[in-house]
Image (spheres, helix red, strand yellow):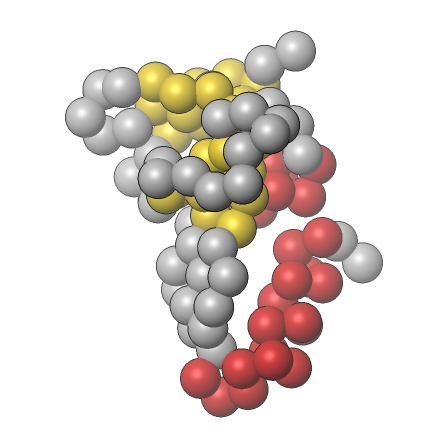
Length: 88
């Protein structure tokens, strides 16, 4: 079972009918599962590096966690954001 599938099942148990996964941009699922560090280009042209995390609550969204010490992030990931490369 993938990390993403586990997240979805856990949230459905926790929030039931109220749970909404529409805020989880599908293009970031592989990077959430792998934990790989990626470089993301945002629609405003800015580029940030980090790993993909997820918010809590009944309608979660993916976050770009800039460092391994990050607890939260203001960089939410959406369908319009593009993965530029995987950072080695």
